[in-house]
Length: 425
Ligand SMILES: *Cc1c(COP(=O)(O)O)cnc(C)c1O
Image (cartoon, rainbow, N blue to C red; front, side, top):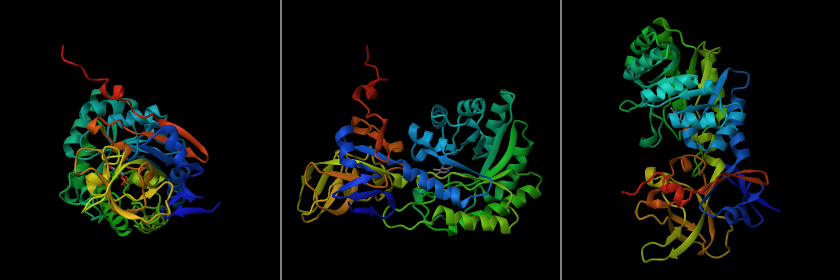
């Protein structure tokens, strides 16, 4: 049978007259597990990881999957087995890594607002490094470590002041941003950290933004980082590793982000040229490992043609797919079984009582009530951001491996949602 691959989605293709993830028909999964349903390709996740691994062949690099992109246990388990560490931003994420069989020593704990309770738990678990984001946090971490009779391994997140040329809500490495230590204060902050007895200074890190589709911000950030490493070491604080964060973009709508392997070959050349070829490296990719591995299958509930707009009301909503409402993000929406009839232009919207509850504007597609649609690029920042708004149960998730499909998260139930609530007596 003819197979028609979707650009940017190598493991998602029309085979015959319907859409498959690897060798599994989405219509079969929807029938078995209901909709909305998230379906992920195992091969796609591992292929995305492999492009990084190729770029780093022969180097000392720890890839720490930034699991906030998709924190489902089986996804973590898959990356742990493939040798990844994890970038976590809360104790909850750390608990997920440990529950999925990941090693504490390969966890990086990031985030601007770690609580003392989280620091305590992470020190006891033995995380590999705390990526510290402020001087006040250094002081707190020092105190918590001393109270446990330990030294906390730390890296300091610096703000290299590079414009990642992405959406302002997901740009993090510019001045005037809540993340990291300002360029000018970096050396002083390292000296202060080195003098605190509860801390052991290991490295330096940055994360300049997300959905970055160009090479230049990374090359610029690397130069700024190496300038800082030189200045910090000249001030007497040796560094073990350099962590360049995550942020590499994916193809949502024809974007052409650099391929990880090629980008890293260039970055490694820069490291070599500047005499840092032997330095240990870390990276924290999230979206680029999982984003295009996933789709959300949704059913068309009603068609509501109108004078100004035609509405296509589907059973997935902003609680399942928050990115359009949150960042005006674009997801491709394609039919699971394309129709030969004429396409029309639709506003694809969910059932939630908010005008912001839209999935796609002005989508040209031929649909009928009861059809299945696939929302693409739904592997990252969808399920991990999903909510129960309007008391909607969160969707189920399936991981496909060839023709095998495993349910990795059952659909939530109403009793799950109400479990912790109490009526007044
Ligand atoms: C979110 C985040 C990442 C991952 O970002 P992506 O754009 O998903 O690759 C990496 N590091 C830190 C500190 C983050 O907050």
